Amino acid sequence: MKRVKQRATATLVIALALVLGLGLYVARYMAHGADWAMFAANAALYDNARLTVGTLIDRNGTVLAGFDDDGNRRFAESESVRRATLHVTGDKLGNIGTGALKAFDARLAGYNAVTGAYSRVGRGATVALTIDAELSAVALKALDGRRGAVLVMNYETGELLCAVSSPTFDPENPPTITDGDTRYDGAYLNRGLSSTFTPGSVFKLITSAAAIENIPDIRTRTFTCTGSQTVGGERITCPEKHGELTFKDALAVSCNVAFAELSLELGADTLARYADRAGLLERLSLDGILSAAGRFDEAEADSAELAWSGIGQANDLASPLAMLRYVSAIANGGEAAEPHLLLKTGLSSVLPREKTRLLNEKTASELAELMANNVTAHYGADNFAGLELHAKTGTAEVGVGKPPHAWFVGFIRNEGHPLAFAVIVENGGSGRLAAGGVANSVLKAAIDN
Ligand SMILES: [Zn+2]
Image (tube, rainbow, N blue to C red; front, side, top):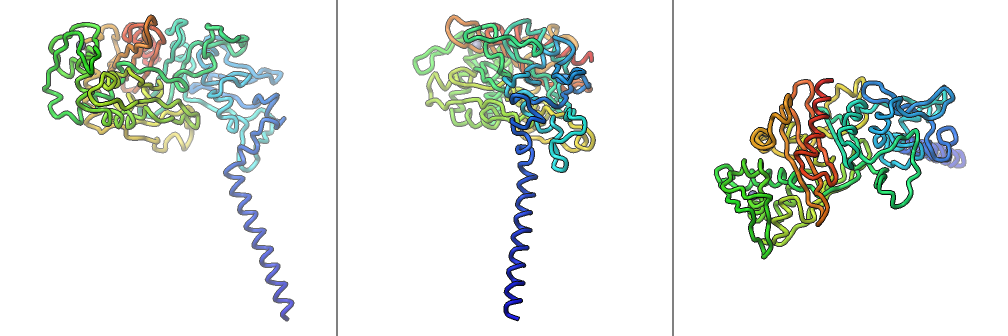
């Protein structure tokens, strides 16, 4: 009897171990199955480490990456669309690491936990992006060969409509890029996501949020700008003498003297906290594609460095995507609808969107009003006719002898087109003229759609 009992116990232990092992395997399979299937030596999916399956389309069904009749990888029909969407789509060789062909390979392969990456026709799955291919082509045309990035997003849903980066190339005829060829400097980078830039005066939107919440008399205070101000033995300069100014005027004309005063008063600690809360210092995830983190160094009290850091100079850095998300939050009552690239369809399209609060509602609404005033009082509403525009320019100094980077960020109020944007033209000169012109063309095309 004793022996039978021993055997029964042993069998039970083995059975339990089997169940546990199977459970563990299933759990690991559910968590990592996509990675296991998507290894680059899997000949059903890859040729020389290049994904050979899957069709990528834009929000309107335009094919961004598909196949010809012989099963060869082909990109969009229109060359201008191919160039404009290169950085979101990716290239044949996989040089563009943030491209969808690489980032969403498991989806493109049609991977699921039941059938794995097997597909009956051997062509993988169709994946739709939130991108608007035609609008992207308009944005690239507006950049007119200059280096930079154009991001446009629906601030209510977080759908990224446009993520154009220049320089670019035609993925059907990729150039051989040799070291030092300046025409293709950083051509594999999606500048909107993977690059950070000196924000210049667009950072004043962060300093302004801190001022609104921490300086009680901010709305009645006046500043005096004589064209420059000495701080910590260094001169903080303005492009012109702005004279007597309110806070509202100071943001509209982007007065460095006024913002130097505010920065010194707020202190490095507070400014750093607001840069952090604004999401500028973190790596953002676009459906798993990570952006570059920005930077804000806390300078000593009463130093010129501190004054410049609140003006968006010094060592400040921000990615265009982080700036886009911040102005989207301003447009959206302080909450950022998280930017994403994968178009939600079916049930997922009606589920609530992921949102993150970057600002309190009242501060967001005050900033929105200030940004509307920037346009009507200073940038010229006529220059943006037909757009209910809220914006901030930035002209970021990037070193002696080099033209500054031109920034333009903001949003429009438009019932069918709740759009936010971030434009940067590298060494483009004036924020309003260079980057503002690009934003104007793209937003007009978007609302005419
Ligand atoms: Zn000034």
